[in-house]
Every structure is written in C-alpha cells, then in structure tokens.
Image (cartoon, rainbow, N blue to C red):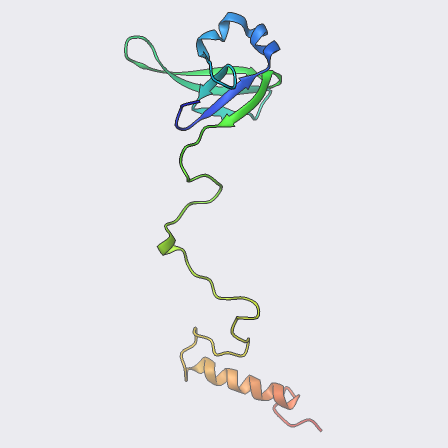
Length: 144
C-alpha cells in the first residue's frame, strides 16, 4: 500500500479464486495480502467501482474502472497520506473566527450591545423599555 492517496481493496480468498486470471494484472502483493490499489471507489451500488490509473505500455496514461460485486470485498483501507482529512474545510489557525464565550464566563444579558452606537436612537429606546419593565406597567405608569 504505497500509493499516496487512494484505497487498497482486499478480497475474500473465494473471490480471488472466482475472479481467477482476470484480476491478476490489477493485484499487488503486500504484507496484508493481495489487494487492488485504486485512486477512487464508489460503493453505492451492488458493484464496487474502482478507478485505477495505469500505463498503457507506450507511455500513455490509461484510466480503468474495475467493477466487482460487493460480496467479494473483505475490506477497504484508505491510504490518505495528508493530514487534511475530514468533513469540513480546513482553515489556517490565524483566520479561524473566535466566538464569544457562552456560559458562566460570558457577559451578562444586560450588558450594552456593540451593534448599537452609544447614544444612538436604539440606546434611548432600550432605556425606555427598561423603565417600563421596572414599573410593571406597559404604559409607564406605576402599578397601583
């Protein structure tokens, strides 16, 4: 398994016997047994589709698709060699946004917001609504 990026597909012994000489040109021997190295695989159907790249003998690149029934495959091993592996885009550490703290270390809910400039129209409306809430009456009159 020395391919930098791709997959090593291992077969059951009975599958190798059933495929016979037809699969021999695509097999590589390794410490874990015979396997097919491929650049991409598709396991979504009843056949596993393996995309292989090879040399046609005259120096031209050939792309082959080898398909076998799912029941013949024992194991598929990813041979990804880079550290970027996962389901999200990797960003450099210096551009990852820092989110505000949540929980006991966060600012209280009554803290001034940074989205409304100090002394702006929103600030006056915020003071009025705070006064109304403290009196207990929506009209701003003290409760009787």
